[in-house]
Each structure stands twice: as structure tokens, then as C-alpha cells.
Length: 114
Image 1: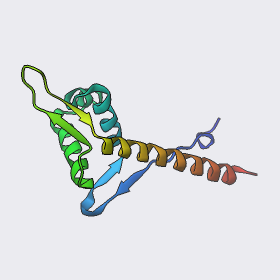
Image 2 (image 1 turned 180 degrees about the vertical axis):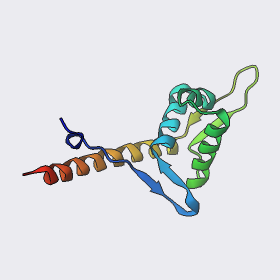
Image 3 (image 1 turned 90 degrees about the vertical axis):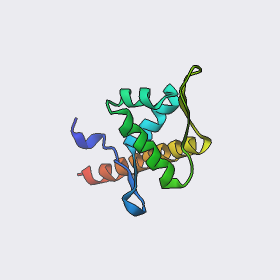
Image 4 (image 1 turned 30 degrees about the vertical axis):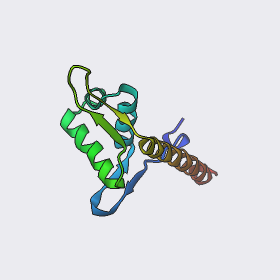
């Protein structure tokens, strides 16, 4: 089997002011949703809490809407959750990835025909 038999698209959407949406930020957003915590999501991605927080803040500013909301720590604990809009961002990006993968696979299959 050659590498060309299962190609995948790598999607990165570039917005104004050098803001980008790609698989890393989307995965971090998914992990915040799964763990309920920016720090836990950061650990799973082997990055610092500060880096993860800056990326989530960048997403909030990129869209002008919150993709996550946080609660301060304390006796009840803190945490973070993905907003409804954040869930839409995840869904949009994953759907776009699937569509791009299908297109790339189709085009590569055409390319590989004898």
C-alpha cells in the first residue's frame, strides 16, 4: 500500500490579522469540552496552561463570540465548558475536514489511474 492510497486533507482557515483555525485549536476545544478544564485539556496536548488559555482566548476574539466559558476556582472548583457556539465551530470544522478528505481521496484516485 502506498501513501497515496489513503490521503487526508490538512485544513487551516486563515482569517484577518493572521488568526488561524486549524486542527490543533479544534482538538484543544474538543478536549476542553471532554475534560471541563483548560488545564486538563492542555496536559492531554502536552502544552502549558498559559498556551492553551491564549489559544482559547484567540478563538474567542477570532469569532467575536465565546467558544468557551470559564468559572473561577475556589471551594466549588473552577472549570471551563464549551459554549453552543464553540460546539458549532467544532462541528463546522470536522464536517469541513470530512468533505475535504473525500475530495482529496477522489482526486488522488483519479490521479493514480493508469
